[in-house]
Image (cartoon, rainbow, N blue to C red; front, top):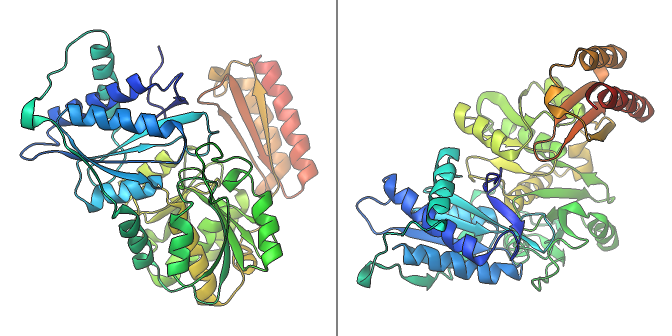
Length: 452
């Protein structure tokens, strides 16, 4: 049986892979493991539990709450809120544990469980492993040590979570958004109420789409993975910009006044220069992944900003930021982490800060994002090959060297094994899209012949 915990918690098809029994068992296991680790020592433990609007979140939330309370943990139910809101409230309320039920940008039938430690930080891998081991041991019959009487956890609604989180977002903005018209696509997800409210309180005129969740429509042809409706709405309403979230609102992509996409790399560039000018870009460094567009790297070099690149995944970006004291990092997909104000990617905060830069400078989003030129990027997935030999194949290494010589300083080649599928990803950037396609296909053919 494979590891339950992936890079972003436990995910699967709700009521098939992720059952009520699994949610309950993992929650009990988490409470016991954290207690054994000393996290609850000297006080009665408290957990914050939130979810996105998926229909399955209703029964999974009930299972998680039951598991925690049965293990002696008091539970504050905050209802439908973004993942970063649950992380923030876990820290702000001094809770010992946070639990978010969401499958982020995945389709509605999926769901997931993510645990946060005290302070709203992601649980260490070692603790996730212990939770999984403990769960498996008890699932096979080992009895739990269960509290009784006054020792069981108490459950109550925490209705102030929405206002507390929105107030936090407004409180960290460098300036107001008066005079801006913004279209918000909430992906019929966890940000459907939060993001429009935050932008409105910050002074923007707000137009909304994707803000009527019914439990079934989350991420359906809307949000950060489907920008078409947002593009059209921005142009139709003559807005200054649009922002799109995913289901749990830990990411944000944007659209400028002409309806053109502004991706995570461009957002990082805009926010990075704003933070540099404000003196808050610690060590003059931005953290991004190896999949960031070469145009972003070249632009930051030109602006005198250092760039540190990590493996793909916002968890690796966050680890690098925390280890070395950096303040800003993120991914092309729109996961942007502003570590002074959030412990995870926060799509609403990202959108607010982007709009604040537009308002403060009086420049359009297109002009600000134009600090970098996105070089054409081609990605080819080569399936059914031995991905374990990517780093050792001499034939492949020679083909990569040839491609790099051809592309020179205005192009880039990246080959990496998929972490979840039997395939190798070939990514090529070049100043010319046709050259990028030709080189990518040539390398894909070599991957197939050398590793097939």
